[in-house]
Amino acid sequence: MTPIPTSPRRPRAAALAALLGSLLLGECASTPSTPRAPSGVAGPADAWLVAIQSQDWQAMRDLLAEDAVYEDPTAADERGVPLRHEGPDAIVAFWQSSSEDSEAQNIRYRIDERFESGGVTVFTMWLTIEVGGRYWNVDRESLQLAGRQVTSVTVRDGKIVRVSDLVDYDATVRRIDALREEYGPRAPGGDEGQ
Image (cartoon, rainbow, N blue to C red; front, side, top):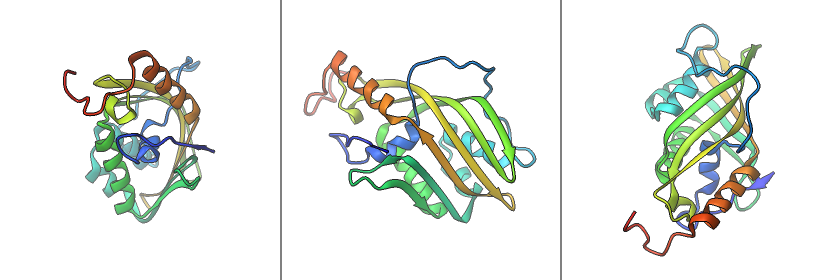
């Protein structure tokens, strides 16, 4: 498990980790798709991805069961504790604050594979996301990140009860370090002139 580095701007880097969900570089071998409109058993799982892409926090809240859990065992905070949030309010607050803190926009999933079994939908996919450079202490207005993740969404009685993301964050950290090397760290108070 890789501890996610703390941003010099805010100590919420572990929170953004789930939003980034990225293993950088490489090509996909299968024909990709995008999340589809909700229908049938897969409806809530696809709608989960759509809610993230559109940053529709109320839609996300509406999808979650009262006992829902979000986890990313591949991410840890500064103390080494794996990322985990319980209950719809905590899950939505996590995603919303992560998105706002990192200035996330243009979130897009490209699904390579998906399967459903026993109320669980599993996606292997690529994510692209634009985030604020200052969040990661890079002297750029924004950073374009892309990468691979596996997400499983468990549905019971039409509501999401568990979401688990699995990500290689080492690649994300290497990419951000390379961008910081290329463009330099953001100067203190470096919001001007961008």
